[in-house]
Image (cartoon, rainbow, N blue to C red):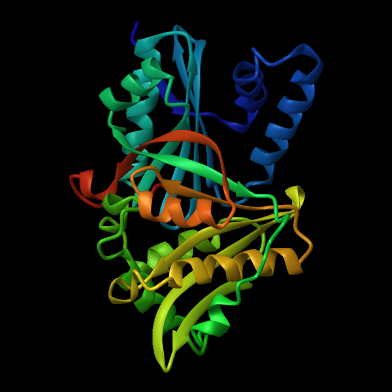
Length: 311
């Protein structure tokens, strides 16, 4: 008989959860299963999907697809020992992503997982780029006063007053950017802003626009991760005509000072491995490389057509 893939029913959630964490350490297994189940049960909007693959009514594999916001979905590579089962689950994920409203569905993997990465590529999720994850411990920060020296003013985000300026700056900073350029072309500034809003716990509280003599220069969007007591630079960009003037370093210095002032333990970020210019700025500002992950993604530009959202 052929493999059938379907959405797991609430009655099947315990079985699927146990299957997903079957290889977890014995002392941690029950806790991981229970925490995962609680997360799924707490989802009131159907954004966390558990997919199951069965053959002759036997559970062969499982997949997890999460719609984090209106334009972004994340998935875990399928949990199964069989290649044909993994392919069936990935194809179902691709269909659901295509029929949703998102602009991208993606997974992050260790670059050395070559077999899994090959399987993703063969089933609609090609390699997009690699992301370098960096972290600043917020020690030995010596303020150079770059914003003051350049007479740059920081302006907090206000939904009613300056949202349009943030959107315009996102559009500008995406131009000729080396940070995932394919993604920038596949979604609007509005979708980008809403996607950044879903990162972390602080919404738009620490978003800033920067201007000099009434000219907008760039933005930095910071997010808080309370459980880890750290902040993240979810986005930083400088307008194309303002690049090469030291503004990027000034914005990063501002972010470091803000995180330090809020008693955080670190400031983290992820950057496209091809963006050597940005990486140089970060390293000169004291960021340390932590690890690199490969992004495999299905983007809106690959969809044959837009279809109604799946509920």
